[in-house]
Image 1 (tube, rainbow, N blue to C red):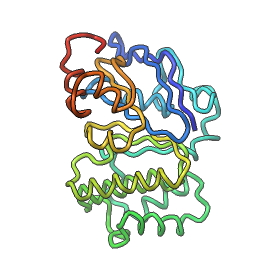
Image 2 (image 1 turned 135 degrees about the vertical axis):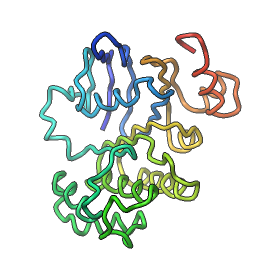
Image 3 (image 1 turned 90 degrees about the vertical axis):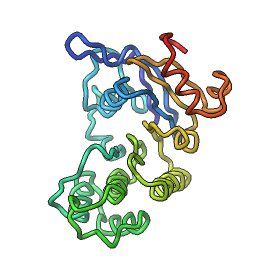
Length: 244
């Protein structure tokens, strides 16, 4: 699925949170949405998911405005994961995944839950209450929830936040393998620049609600005269200029 963001603006009262942004994510590509905390990334994702109505501008999914089309016809092809949105704590992992599988219309959901729990290595705690899991376990379950319907459009908001290096690498490798074996478009918001370099075909950098730079990781590193994306990100984030 293709995403086109055109002249997107979001105001909350008198505050402009997202200020006239434009970008495209082509089918089967991964775009990194980067920027410091409070730059408008999460609000932008909310508008792309159709959860937040733009003040102006539009989000097109395969050419159709997300706010005008019958979203129920495409929601089964979209999913989202974030470690900051917790699943119901009193339900077991299996119960949570079953509920989401049913909501997304997954037909053979028991088989799908078995497959995804094996792939992400959490069969051993399928029947444990979600609220009793460690941060790393919760992140894997959150990722499983986002893939339960085998989406064609996947939004990942800091999927490896707070994970130890081993589990974080496991999750990144799984995302790479899943992307390689499935036709899926991914939008990744992350503060981990090595993760972005590893997973993303291109990046968009936001600052104070605006897009201040974009391109491939390699082109941005070269443009800003740095050795890696993290140093390029820091230069842009600390610049006093509106546009890097």
